Image 1: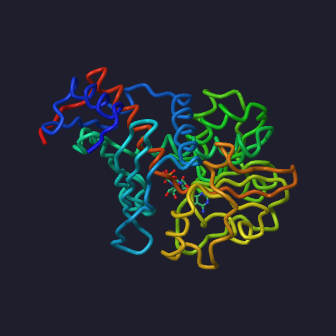
Image 2 (image 1 turned 120 degrees about the vertical axis):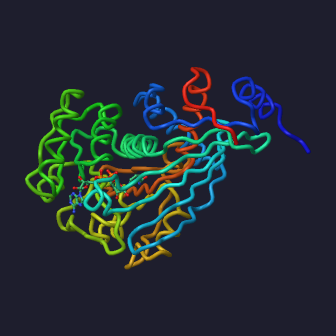
Image 3 (image 1 turned 45 degrees about the vertical axis):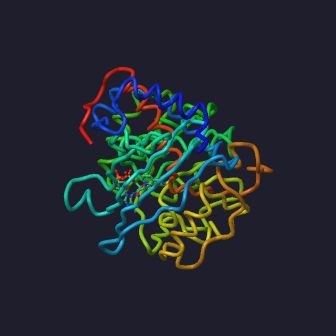
Length: 344
Ligand SMILES: NC(=O)c1ccc[n+]([C@@H]2O[C@H](COP(=O)([O-])OP(=O)(O)OC[C@H]3O[C@@H](n4cnc5c(N)ncnc54)[C@H](O)[C@@H]3O)[C@@H](O)[C@H]2O)c1
């Protein structure tokens, strides 16, 4: 059987640090964070992953999952990105009621990374931080491609994702003058401002209501809650031509009418959106998909073609991004001797 030289070279490098087949590296969330990946690093890694996806140089079957109750899911998210020698799988849950009921995050999970030559697991690490970082990276890279001159950005949902979106967006939308935020919880907005305003020069403004934020911003994103029945809090009549809407919460927060009437409905992964549609998350049907986010980032398909286009770009999350970030974390951890080696 033929194994490419670079795969064998990679195995050689890994085996200098860990006994492949006998051990794996375990990284806690604290250790993952301690490896020092900054927003610029995550943006570069995520861009590479999106380009690999857009140019079809990857393998990533649509998520499979289990659903112990209504509105909750666990997803298995495997991916292989050859350009990064990144092979692994994220196992993640989405429990929307966790914050209220258990004072726990909506999303927690683990990422397994594997040696490509032998297939052996070589690392297990927290994936909540990776998810919290690569998700805003995807949103803002799409914003940069679709609306680079935007002066206003609006964020609905000021939790884990909302906070990171605000931190990430200033790296790519260089003309931003104002960021509007909105959350049903006043305290979440206050916490976001407290954490983010000292870090960024752009003024962060607390929105009075969703309508005010929608009408004040060229680019909008939402990270609230994913439900089977859309909340449709953002009324279609508030949305105008020329806006760019980037939901992270699938079909929940914006009125689904907007996605259906948009000039372009772009998604990170057609297969993933079709899968969620099959699970019932698009009760009125999946809008017609123009192309994929990675294709726009890679320059394979056109994004915005004129300033009046209303564009909705829905990114539900792709494991190509997780394994590419995970591989960089693994490299750093092996180089720096971070983490605990556990016997297999
Ligand atoms: N697309 C992706 O790749 C991806 C990745 C991770 C999480 N998510 C999704 O993003 C969403 C947010 O995740 P998180 O980790 O930031 O959760 P979180 O619980 O930390 O934050 C969610 C925030 O949304 C607010 N919110 C809830 N309902 C609202 C409403 N109707 N109007 C305004 N605000 C509302 C909550 O008060 C909370 O502050 C979840 O739906 C999650 O599943 C998507």
